[in-house]
Image (cartoon, rainbow, N blue to C red; front, side, top):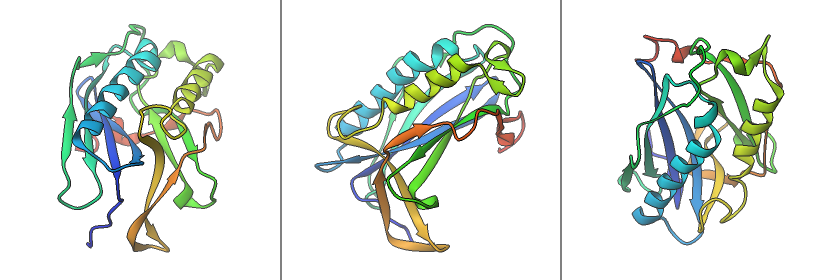
Amino acid sequence: MTYVPALNTVQAELRYLWSTQKCENVLYFQASAGMTTALMTTLGGALITWWNTNFKPRASSLLSLTEVYLTDLSTQTSPTVSVVTGLPSAGSDVTESMPFNVTIAVSFRTNNRGRSGRGRNYVAGLTEGLVNGNAPIPSYQTAAVAAYQALIGAGTFVAGLQWCIVSRFSNHLPRAQALVQPVTVALLADTTCDSMRRRLPGRGR
């Protein structure tokens, strides 16, 4: 398949080990003045701090952030950077973990409609104390959304970068160049727990 570039845009993969199961969340950031490996390294370190601050205190001790892997999407041969400073970093909550598929979906929106203008992350590491019935407790919902809202805005999270949504396809066909749009809001589309079956042990290998 033809490569679809996203100019001056970095893909950041937050890679986790949940007991023996590998899982990850992906975020995208666009540079205002060109992508560099130094900027990618700075972003990787900032994302580690962001996770340690917002999710580590509430995440199961069975879940560890093991790597932030960054890829410059400008061309098919643009550089990658792996940031592992201070990792692995395990969650602090020692109460019983929920089954690994149980998650909450934080939705990201831009100013434009359609699937090309939105994205999401499935937050990992929920424990029994964070779930009441079929929904995460309200304080966890608020904290998860606030963590993602802190990424919004040009230069808000890391100078020279803006959190964005990347769309490589339109009407099921590859674009000549990816559509990159800034995220304007993070929210919960609903408060019901979701299921990410690929996170169950033995899946997705």
